[in-house]
Amino acid sequence: KNEVEQSPQNLTAQEGEFITINCSYSVGISALHWLQQHPGGGIVSLFMLSSGKKKHGRLIATINIQEKHSSLHITASHPRDSAVYICAPLSGGSNYKLTFGKGTLLTVNP
Amino acid sequence: GAGVSQTPSNKVTEKGKYVELRCDPISGHTALYWYRQSLGQGPEFLIYFQGTGAADDSGLPNDRFFAVRPEGSVSTLKIQRTERGDSAVYLCASSAGTGYGYTFGSGTRLTVV
Image (cartoon, rainbow over all chains, first blue to last red):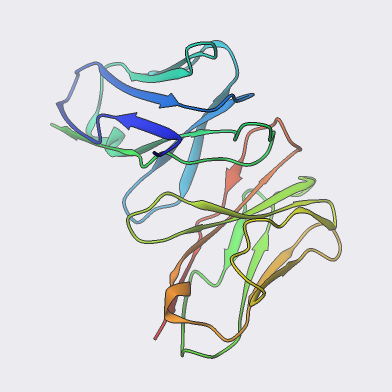
């Protein structure tokens, strides 16, 4: 069983819709990264969080350490948000090694 | 530099050859990480440097893989006797230390033919 489960695997939305991507993990962690990867592009770190909520522009990330669950929300989605979004917790017992989810492919249509 | 730079961006090599992949991290970042991303998979951890030393090399798949960071800045990932299964995107990332956010490079796409 993969230690990190993301849902949905694929998501298609219309421009302007509110997007939610979920991440569940099975091991204890100290923090979690949300990453973005455009097709053929590099990986960009969006957030690193260990508790509560963080907001950056139209992106919001939340985490519940006790429930081993995190969510990434995109408000007022735009076609340029189309990318793979990856949840990557810091592996249990490590404060540096990321375990990557398989990613959620988001397509936002105009 | 402004970001993490990886060179070359693409490398095609013949089976059995030796290759070197270079990573130039953000200036001042003490922590450097190598990951490998095979087609359709998420990246997998290879090695972590803190300064000049490899603090954790448990992800290196076998002794054909070796990485160095002699001056605590630029790192080189070396692969001997390449095999077709080594084909992947090799990602480098750096951070100001553990517990800080990562900055990723654009990766080196290695193809072994």
